[in-house]
Amino acid sequence: MVTAGGQLLLPLGWGPAMADDSLSAAVAAVTGAWIGDGVLAAQTLDKFGLLIRRFARYAAAHDVSTLADVDPGLVAKFVAAKGRTRHGIVSQAAVATMHNRRAALRAFYRTARRLQLTLDDPTTDIDVPARTSSAQRPLSDDEAALVRLFSEHATPTRHAATAALLLAGAHTAELGHISAADIDPQAATVWAHGSSKHRPRILRLDSWSVRVLTERAAHLTDPLPGGAHPPMLCTGAHGSNAHKQARVCVTVRDILTRAGLSDDNGIRPTSLTAYAARREFDRTGRIEDAAHLIGSPSLDTTAALIGYTWHDPGGAP
Image 1 (cartoon, rainbow, N blue to C red):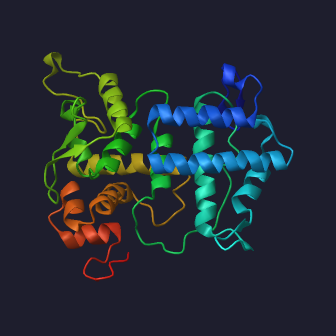
Image 2: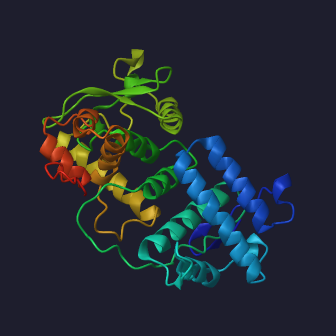
Image 3: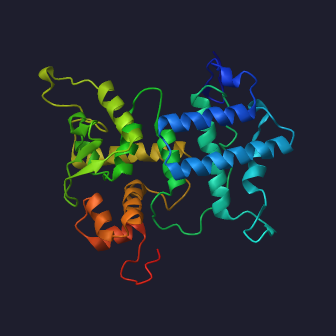
């Protein structure tokens, strides 16, 4: 057991699918893990799966067929590679395209490392041009996927629980009051207690959120006999509301840094809650539904949170 680049190197547990260390086998193994974990939404799973298979073909065209032979240079070339427009014209990669490619590869290597298929992550220092706007915005589906993947650790830490609750529609000010007793795994819901600005409500959970929250609850132990005070999922039981919220924001910043999203000025802790509101609005087309989900009494505030000009008949954000 040695260290390299400040990271602990563990022995690789090669599975049958990875006996030849081929990149195509790694793609298959990672895709299977994504499906089994339920960590990616169906649309994101399709997009990431397409992109990492495309990367494997790109690598093969550059005489790279094994996971071990992929280096940062090849990744950088793929991220910035020219492509064809819908009209068949070869052009420079759009900024959004480069972000999508990098996100898919970050997700791929995060999972490959968790599966112990590799110790390396050649995506770490790959830079792409910043998005044009620095205004606060919701996470995209791809960014939410990275937040989920990079929030999980070897033990059920508060990082994954924090990400799960915020992506479900909770606010940073509420997380200091949500305990293990508030989770209902059978109903796939969690009770959000509300705050001075937000109403109490029940939040729906997807399969990934149920898993990480129940794992977190099981990992925690109540220091008081009799279980009179169920443990808080994301903060300590003591401290002011401001202190608890500050700790939640520090946790989110750590997740965003690990996911490679901290250099985007438009992404802030509120971007995770905004993601849930935006998805609800996209699902129903009603700003009222988005406001209800996040417990907001103000439609204008909710519209601003998700970047929707709701008084405009066009409604384009």
